[in-house]
Amino acid sequence: MKAAFEKQVALVTGGGTGIGAAIAKQLAEAGAKVLITGRSDHTLKSSATAHPNIAWLAADIAKPGDCARTIDEVKSRYGRLDVLVNNAGILEVAPLSDAGAEHVRRTFDINVVGLIELTRLALPLLKASKGNVVNLATVIADQPFANMSVYCASKAAVLALTRAWAQELAADGIRVNAVSPGPIETPMFTAEKLKISPAALDQMAPQVLSLVPSKRFGKPDEVAQVVSFIASGAASYVSGAQYTVGGGLEA
Image (cartoon, rainbow, N blue to C red; front, side, top):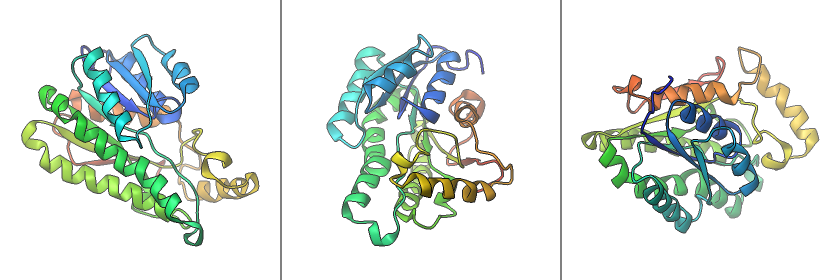
């Protein structure tokens, strides 16, 4: 994939840690100029040190003003956009009895509403470059887990958006695809991020792992490799597709 993205520009949301950071690094190593966004200056700065082609901008995808500011930054800094990777997202475990309006709103604002707004604002740049969009979903959008109904529903929406946009934007030369990771070793899979107790996490991890035929958690780089392929010219006839990266745990 070396130099596959030479002279191209990529925007990766949620690029401060985990899968997003791995995607940014791989795209940068393949020649792209990459802008990563997220809510933490500290993690963004750390991620950007992985390659000189990576720049960062603190921005919250759940805020429409930050989405607009992000696209303005891409325009002023690079003047073009070839690849949009909608990676930012949150996963909070909650049974239906605890899934109140705030939980639902927070999940959908980041996982769905912000993704739509950022992609909408990026359209003029993507049309000019005949670029492409890669949306990060999850294997459990198709095979939902108990106590994760809101998260699963938000990612099912991402898959629906992917398939609709692939049809809608084909005439503009824009490809849209989804990557659905399975259990991946990332900072998202912590008790604090999941909003559960450490004891509950200790119980959850082996239960999740028991469902994975490969019997291991994936690495962020293993997801990033697939994203890099789909976003590259090697996948020029791929649109509206869903690629699962789940060690045999299929969508």
